[in-house]
Amino acid sequence: MFKVAGYSWFLAAVRKLHWDYPTCVALLWVAAALAVFALVLAVCRRRWVAFAAFVYVLFYPSAFEADIGTRMYRNSVLIPLYVAVIGLAVLLVWKVAFDRFSVPGLLVLSVVLGVGFSYTYYVKEDGAWLAASLAAAFAVGLGVYAVVGVRRWRSRKRGSVSGGSASGGFASGDGAGASYTLRRFVAAVLAAVVPFACLAGVTAAYKAVNKKYFGIAMTETRLEGQLFDFISRVYSIDSPNRSMYVWAPADAIDAAFAASPTLAKETYLHDMVVHSPWVGGNPIDFSQGTTMYEVPFPGDFFTWGMHSALLYAGLWQSQQQVDDMFRQVNAELDRAFANGTLRKSTRFQLIKTAGGYTRDEMLECGVFMLKGYYGLLRLINYTPGSKAGDYVDPLRPDESPVLSVQAAQAFNLPYLADYSLREGRFGPANRVVSAVFAVYRVVNALMAVLLAVVLVGGVVRLCRRRRIAAPLTGRMVLFWLTDLALVLLSAAYSYVVMWFSAPTLVGEYTYSNANYYNLGTVSLLVLAFCLALAIAANAWTAHREAQAHREVQAA
Figure 1 (tube, rainbow, N blue to C red):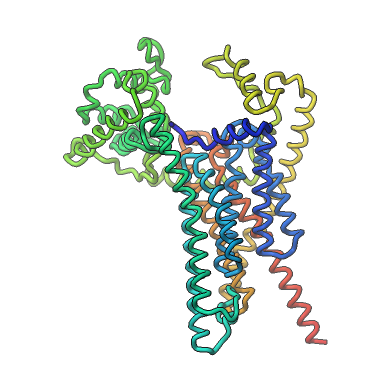
Figure 2: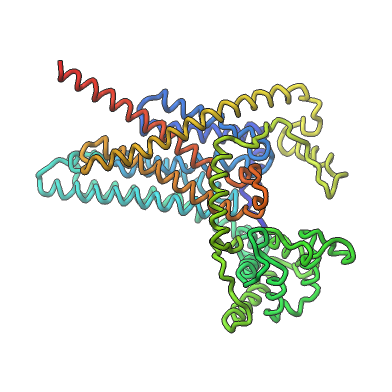
C-alpha cells in the first residue's frame, strides 16, 4: 500500500491479454496521438496539420528513452496517459463551450475520459494535480456555455437578434427554445460530472479492497494517513540544520520523539530510525554503518526510513494499528506546537510532501525549473532504451537471474531471460532511436519558437482589437487561452516537481534526475506545441483568405 497500484493493474492486463509489454505501451502512445489528432482537427480543419501532430506525438522521444520510456516502471505509461486524458478533457470543454455537440456523443466522450482519468489518477500518488486541472477546465467550459446560453435566451426573448449572432461565435442551434438550451446545459453538466463520478467509484472500490485485505480504507500510505501526517509535521519543526537537501534533520526527529509521550516510550523504534539503512546504517548491528547524526536523511528518505524502522522494531502489526498509533502521536505533537514545546519552522512549505525552503532556495527552484525546460526541449541526457542495461539488484545479486525469468514470463518477452535471442537487434535499434532524438531536438526548438510567436501574437491581436465580434475570433480566443493555460500549468507543475526533487539537484544539477520526475511537463508541452501548430495554421489560412478577398475587391 505504500504506492498506488495503477501500474500493477497495467502489468496484470498485459499478463491477462497475453500481449507483450512494448506492444501495450505502444498502444497507449497511439491513443495519445489519436487524442491530439482529434484536438488539432477541432481547431484546424486541415487533416495534414492534424496528421503532423499525430506523428509528432506518436514518435515522441520519451517513448524510447531508457529511464522514462523503456524501463519497466510506471514512468513508461505516464506521459501518453497524461496527453490522452488532458487532450480529451480539453476537447470535451471545447465541445461544451462552443455548443457543438450531440448529447449521446458528448456523454460517450465523457465516459471514455472518465475511464482514462480514473486509471491515470492511480498510476502515481500525485494525481490530485490532474483532478484539479480537469475541474478548473470543466468549470470554465460550463461557465462559457452558461453565459452564452443566457445571452442567446435573452436575445430570442427580445426577438432582436438570432441565436447565432448573439453568441459571439460560440453557439449554434437556431430556433431552439429555453427548454432546449436547458436540456443541453444539463447534458453538459452531466458530461463534466461523469469523469469524477468514475473516479469516485474506482476510489470506493479501491478502498474497499484495501480495507478487506489490509485492514484500512486508504488507497496508499506514502502521502495519505496518519504516518504521513507525522512525517509532514517533522518537516515543519524548526531546525537550523534543515536545507534543500535535508528535510528531516536529526534534531527535528529527536524533538518529535521527545515531544510525543507515545514515541518517547519507543526507544527501540528511535534506535531503528537512528541506524536506518536509508542513511547507511545497520539496524541489526549498531556498530556497523553510519547514523542519521553522521549522514542525515536526504529529501523524502525519512518517509521510507520510518516505514523500515517500524518493521524492524516490530511495531507494524497492521496498517490500521500504525494509523491509530500515529493519530495519537500527531495529537501530541499538535499540543506541543500549541504550548511552545515545539516551534514551527519559518521556512515556506509549499507542499506537505516536502520540506520548507527559504526565499533564496525558492528562487533556486525557479532556476531548476528553467533548466528543466531546457533539458526537456533539448533532450539532454536522453539515452536510447534498447537494452540500456540488465537489472541487477545490488542487495540480492544471486536472485537477478530468477527475476529475469519472472520478468520474461510476466511481460511475455522471452528475450529478457536470454538476450542472445535478439542480440543483433539492439545496436541498430539504438542507432535509429539516436537519430529520432537528433531530429526532435531540432523540431522541439522550432515548436518552442512557434509557441512563443502564437502566445505573443495572441496578446498583440487582443490588444489591437477592443471588441471581439467575428465568430472565428471568439473561437480562436478560447483556443489561444487554452494554449496559454497549458503553458502556465506546465510552469506550475514543473516548479512543484523541482521543489520536490531539489535534493537530487542541489550541488550539481543533473538533467537525468530532472527528466525522470518532470513527466507532466513533457505532456503539457507536447499538447501546447500541437495546439500552437493548429492555431498558427488557422491564422495563416485566415491571412491568405483575407489577402485574396482584398485582391478581389481591388480588381
